[in-house]
Image (cartoon, rainbow, N blue to C red; front, side, top):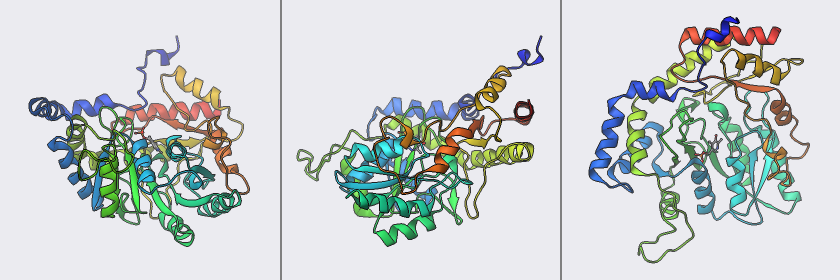
Length: 383
Ligand SMILES: *Cc1c(COP(=O)(O)O)cnc(C)c1O
């Protein structure tokens, strides 16, 4: 019998391990909400927003129902709609471009940098040119901090300033990471994040938040969050959403935020060990100068000639799960293939979609389990 058959399957992310560590503190936080019964707009929501402001350095934090709503609400607040273009990378989770399309504006997809997987500023310029050629008005750019690593915000802001674009950072995967020594949440005009359970800082359901230093924008977002409510609560002054984060999730996040820095350090240790164990057989992730990562995913690239499906099957047979983010870049997906792309096409995004694969990554991945993964990857690559 194959010796691997006796080994326990490895979880891709281990939410249970974190739950055990937090133990009673979560139970008690939930019990407090169950006792006061303010399930919407309870005191924990305000408390969490204050804590997140402190953590990120942003002046205003508006919590909301999901990362997708966080992006959408900012675009709505900026009155982005039909005839407008919002430039975003194609190699990202679909919500980045989806939020744009939901407003009636057109996403325009750019390519990414091959080493960091993040938006390529030169392609951003070509995306703006493509938008203008189509008669669209370029209004905003959404850089994404993909897989947990900060995008090159200075390079993107330089183009954005020259073109008069609003910058909305999609930090759904990167919240907690920093750029030039400062945490995400203060780059661009606004930052969106997600608290989906699998994100580096996740709750026990759906949730999100928006960070900004712009008081007027924050006030508009608070109105959009409750159906466009005005100062007279019976007179709605704009369109909005049911966009609130519920109190239970806020209470859980307050407890999780207390250990987030420690978890980020643990994730970085795991990433360093992966790089040492795998750096000479596959392409391991590259951290750009001045950028840190919270390792939402640990994504490697397989060498030419290694069949990705065969590689994944080989690991699976040994109880090791993998995932492919992203099999198709956004411009290759059915719902998005008719939107414009940057001039010259998106060859890097297409290449990455063909050869990336993500390995188990979380703060509680112990060394023996990680060594088992490293051995399996090395074996599968040379098989
Ligand atoms: C997860 C994610 C989102 C959306 O967040 P939800 O909370 O799932 O709506 C947006 N952008 C990126 C890059 C993501 O990874």
